[in-house]
Length: 250
Ligand SMILES: C[C@@]1(CC(=O)O)c2cc3[nH]c(cc4nc(cc5[nH]c(cc(n2)[C@H]1CCC(=O)O)[C@@](C)(CC(=O)O)[C@@H]5CCC(=O)O)C(CC(=O)O)=C4CCC(=O)O)c(CCC(=O)O)c3CC(=O)O
Ligand SMILES: NC(=O)C1=CN([C@@H]2O[C@H](COP(=O)(O)OP(=O)(O)OC[C@H]3O[C@@H](n4cnc5c(N)ncnc54)[C@H](O)[C@@H]3O)[C@@H](O)[C@H]2O)C=CC1
Image (cartoon, rainbow, N blue to C red; front, side):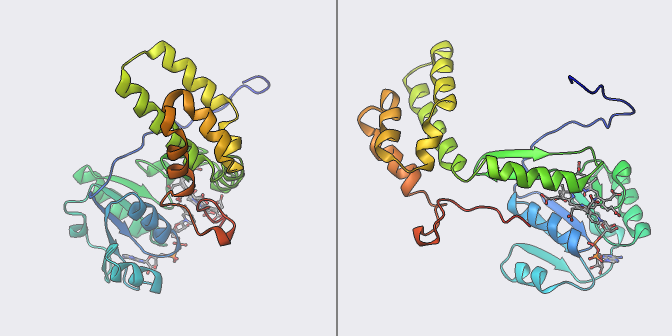
């Protein structure tokens, strides 16, 4: 840091992106916070069970759609059987502490909504653009700041990053299929990510995008550009005036 030296005790953590597809995960307490954690787990493809005596309409709707399983009762330690991650998200500190204690006995990683220092992990604020994911943590010091930074970053890393990353991935596949040349590829990819490609994607200037892709994609450049930018499944209807889905700023 240039101007400020870090002072005081720093929170030690190890950032990872977990593959939790199809893994059983438990959310205890399906209120405001529990629902937010549940939505994140569902997005990641987990098998989610929610323990909530008074499930909300939102949760019941998700259960109808087969996204979650709800047990409309109070938590009992047996609920933890077979679970890999647990979120203690009730408004009752003693219930959350019990969930954490029992999870600890079983070696299940636990996030406690009201006890950052007792948690095995906590969640970052997220900017997601397809496979591009920016995760923001303040070490638990200020979730409000994490949320604000997420919204600021969403403006910088706008929806155009989705087709941009998709294109970079396709170009990389083409080049790697032709052979490995780490030095040459590095320069090529660096010039593509630093150059004007993103700007032309934003403008949907297909001619120029195709021109920039040509050195790698050859005669397929225009077809590639169209399939990724104009015909991408994530694209919303043009009458809405949006290219790709934007996350709401809530
Ligand atoms: C430690 C952590 C554990 C965890 O939950 O994983 C934790 C803990 C607590 N949060 C509390 C409050 C708020 N949490 C939010 C929002 C988010 N909280 C998230 C994560 C985390 N929250 C982890 C640390 C992340 C980090 O490193 O910063 C986000 C990023 C991700 C997510 O939850 O999915 C999501 C933003 C998502 C987005 O918008 O992008 C807001 C903002 C708002 O609602 O406007 C407020 C009110 C304002 C405020 O307090 O700042 C309280 C109660 C404090 C009290 O009693 O007053 C506790 C408990 C405590 O601190 O004791
Ligand atoms: N980590 C975070 O991001 C944040 C954490 N918090 C903390 O999270 C906790 C929950 O907050 P909210 O979701 O706003 O509360 P809430 O009151 O909306 O939800 C709590 C839910 O837990 C359920 N519940 C109560 N006892 C239970 C039991 N024995 N078994 C199963 N479910 C039970 C209730 O029926 C209720 O639906 C609070 O302690 C709050 O301080 C608050 C804001 C953000």
